[in-house]
Length: 220
Image (tube, rainbow, N blue to C red):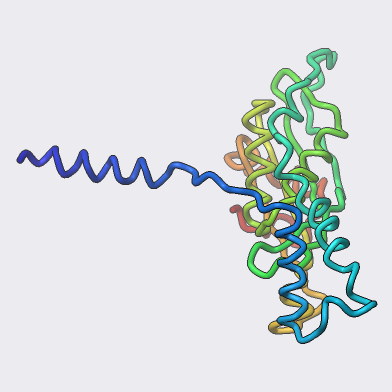
């Protein structure tokens, strides 16, 4: 047996491991029963008057909280505009409020996203940037990942000279449980293109955003 044969089998195993596993979405009745089970596990009776309608309300809430799984973030940015009269400065949308849920505890993450990009030859409607945030926020998330997802999608579709995304958010998984530390916010940033390679451009965009520390954010 040649050395290449086990290597080929190993590569094959790695390739197969990367294939996404098809997910079967449970039926609505299964979801309702899951909520009833959690109510019983918490120590209450899902059939009592105050709780009998709770499973239905929770399932409808989940449909809203996690609607981002049903939308394509790339498709949102496909319609762009090239008639900019030569505009070649930073485009920024600040203080986009978002609500998401931590994938570790399914606890709310609430904060603001700041998006900036330096156009190459086309721009996108600003409402699409806000919608892009919504699509990724309406999924189970960690803040580092949503920061990267937003920046990477803008970079992929618009192909600008630079992209900057900064997120400031409070995580209820640490304010209402665990360490119980209210008033703490987490800041993440993702810099691509000139905002990553050129210190002057990075300082300019962070100054426009108004990030505390003037650019002390970690790049994820």
